[in-house]
Image (tube, rainbow, N blue to C red):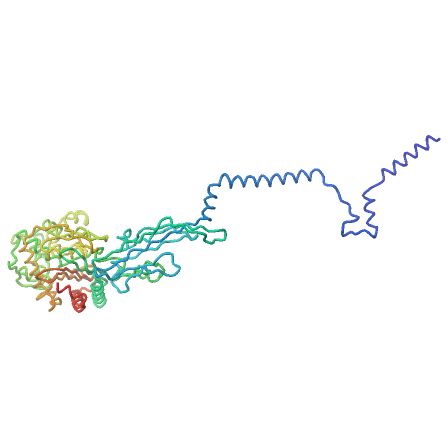
Length: 568
């Protein structure tokens, strides 16, 4: 009995123990009114389980690995690169720009100079304001920065004219400076690694006043007489120095250098006058009758004709057609010249006379023929570059049987081709500078000179022609007669004796013309040769470009600074 009681007692106590819940005991304390729940009194705190510790450890390990790998990448893999960047941030390298050389005319007058503006890193170029200098001087591009502000192009780059062809001489040498800066970008110290060296100055053979007046005379004539453009130049026949060289229309050197005025630049691109083309050296034009003095002296040298031989001309030369007698070939003159000798033929530009001495006439008269024409004109520089100092140029075209075969699909040469070549037509192309060099060779009795642009350049003779002096004298006399009583009487001035020759070259299917005048002065002791060209004008123009030359000569004679050219 006693034993059974003990068993039941033990069983009761066990059940009481099993039914006791400690959470309930704690939670019941919420009913105690004096607990501060804001301080979590009466709230049960559970211990963290093992999984929580494992997850936390793994996260820490991952973050540590990321930091370690990033540190390895920056210190080991990219260490050298970041070191360089760090040094660059601490030491900053800058360019010390040089001053570009100044360009002067032959009298020491500035044509191009440098202008330094406040806060500008390099000087800007300033060009003479007067018109007529752009093709001569050219333009350039300035040092260029990328989006980060670093210079990817540190040099001035000449783009045309003197600026281009003497670019390295004008540029000088860049310098370098390293600035030490602190963490806030303040300069602590500087160290010049290499000083910049300014570019060399250039003195040209050009006379500023000659250049300006020549351009104005040409421009006025072209605009008033319906031509598209033109070129002109003047050269010393004794040493090859070019005193003036212009091309119309032209561009603005400053506008192209700055490259900001897009609208004006666009007008240049669509201008039919081609303002980017330096027509004096890079334009190729049909010469027309300005080649006649060269054909004439070739005929004299090859004993084709005496200068005093009279040739009858009646305004045309007729070649019979044996296959169709009713349809002969007719080669016309610009007027009926009557009977002429060489002096008259040059003075009044007789086409028929030059047809005969160039290509002959049936069995009655033997002419030069195309081979001798080509050989003699080549000696004066036609068909090849003049090798002018400092400029790219074209070489023109001398018609020949070989050229015709290529140009006209094996078409054979005929006498009519020789006739037209003799008067500067039929594919004949030349630059104004070539004509100028050729006329200079007539004026100086046979020296074909290389044109010079730099004043300190020495004279260079390209070829010495082994022609008789008496033949040069005949051509000079004929050109003087052209001025006094022939086609260029506009140049018969009272303050200087000029010898000259005009030319009217038919182009564009004879609907347009080029007007030329070439010559030299003074007649008795030649010192200077000149050329004026007006291109692509009305075919019935009555007033030749000789009138532009007249205006030019009068203007420089009236200028005290340039009058000396007539007095030397």
